Image (cartoon, rainbow, N blue to C red; front, top):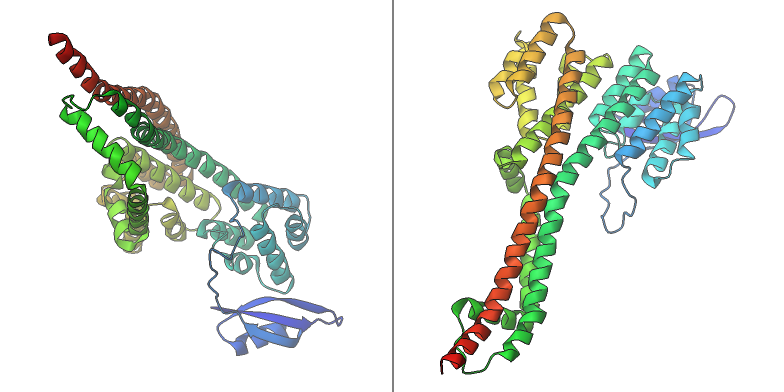
Length: 403
């Protein structure tokens, strides 16, 4: 499907512009003529790659999208036409990227494009989940309800992300602080102690290592900085590469402590998204196809693809999910009961709430555990450094006393 930008005259002779979707230019012309428009200009939209250095627009946050969805739902429930509601919101949102997108969506919908197509033109802003819910609401005539569910889903997603970020940011901050403190002591404190040690003193090996490291950092700091930048850049490039991504996906759930937290997060996100889509009136197959990629795990996504194939072959959702070995028995049993009783969306929501609570509990437990461990580790590092610095002085004083 291609998209064409147009400028046309309507029946009243007013100039309007927008976009229309079509397989080819001829089909686009036919669509516009069927809408009673006289074509002035028609041009196919070519995708352009924007440099990250040039494009300064900030992507809208989950909070931005949640607020927009809730506001649009309220305006539609009050009887305001969708085009007028979108135009009004486009004038008051703070995010520039979202504001421009909504302005174009308003123009496209006024020009005859359906709402789902208009939103799908901006996949970097509106996810597959978002577009699927818009489509379900538009088709079923319950757009305001779909938008309200979307808002609730996005808000819960934000809470979940904040919990995970909180669990990861604390040890990262402590680690950076420990490294900065160690480097500062080696560069500034060690030379002071070196001056207090006589040239004839016997230097223990551990102290000599610290002195050599200090000398190296102070004399060849440019090499250390270049090496650090090269290593960090290399690791970042590897992490963004396909190989690095696949390696991370393969082993991230096996990490001690954090692996379990990440698995719970992914399951909570997947079940919450699937529940929202099913409650929005989307079929099971389409809901699974949309929920899989939004889970945040390639393993879960591949498992869901196999589940869709199994459903098409007549198998149950629970049996195909169980074969993946990724989902805990509780999830499988809840899905099985939901399939049998016809209450799958409600039970999936309960599973999501359970795992969201588990993520919150695990996060708080990690923070409570990491804090004393970090203090102990930093304390041992500082004590070890001071002992290695004072050791030559103690050795010198002891040898002089023996004389």
